[in-house]
Length: 457
Image (cartoon, rainbow, N blue to C red):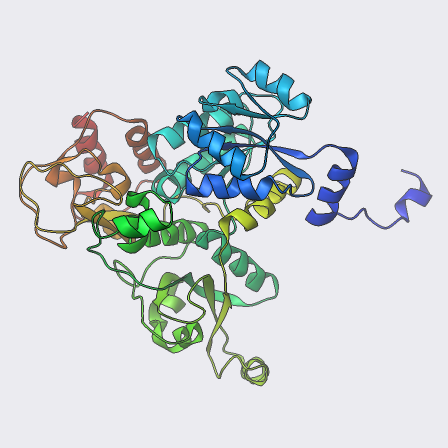
């Protein structure tokens, strides 16, 4: 480097500027999307605009007609059906978007820069993510079902492969985590974070949600999980694992209030100060988005915060009044590719889990129907408490058969069920437990837990 060069200002490394450079150079980030449900279609619509410096290069879905619909709605007319990565490479090089029923075509294509996994499935999604890692592709998981169960071990696998794994901005964990990181960057101390919810009803089921799902053209089980606390618990687990926060109690506190800033006095101070918590509000304006609670003891700083209308403290609420997964996703894509910066990813091992709870009185011999079904709902709990009772994660519950009756609202443990045939998700969850074993846990503890679960296979 010459003396003259060393005196030049550094190049602009902002995400927006770098995307503009890529757009001008004809080198957009080429995105492969796996999944064409409601969220996948919304993503295709947004990327089909197109976003400067980013292109939807390919979409994979097990039912090709759904992927075709996503491309039509995204106004992408020039697309090609492909069966191999080589065919995809050739089509993308000609500026065409590719469609396939095999996600491996995208994860193995040299033309794809990043994979967005948006299936909402656990086993299938895990396979997609691992294959992307094997081919050195960064991954955005728009999949709280998968991330809340085995995000930590997938993050470890991503690190081993030298790629980024991240959840997305726009989904509530990413909205809240982006706000957490901002607060930290200006010297504030976050002690709580979470979701702004309109309602929670543990006992909603596919029958009660059928009309809503039809009206909004969404999967009825997915919509059920939105209402019965399962998706809320999965999203806050993703956030807990990214911040190291825990919960004040199983299921969180979830205070009802008129305005989200009331959480400053409604959330329990002791667990917030002890290490931080994730939680949620019910019915609070602005009715959607994410929040962060910070703590400040300095009297002079508290005077300044009061002057700027944030209250008297010592707890203060910051919030983002929207969450728009399809619109905010490009930011996560760009940060991952351009700066290797995950929006939200596990710090290490699990901090929290989502445990399975009976939605009604269940009989011996009943088969659990998993996320968004009739038999159970999911509640977030601390990892330590979940392992102490040998809790069955709801993302592993589908297909489990009850050994005996379980009462409504009782948590279900591995001891209560016969497991189905071995699945990839079971093995990855076991790997996660082995990598981060619990020390000094009472009850069954992780060692016996793993032996019992392994024996069932």
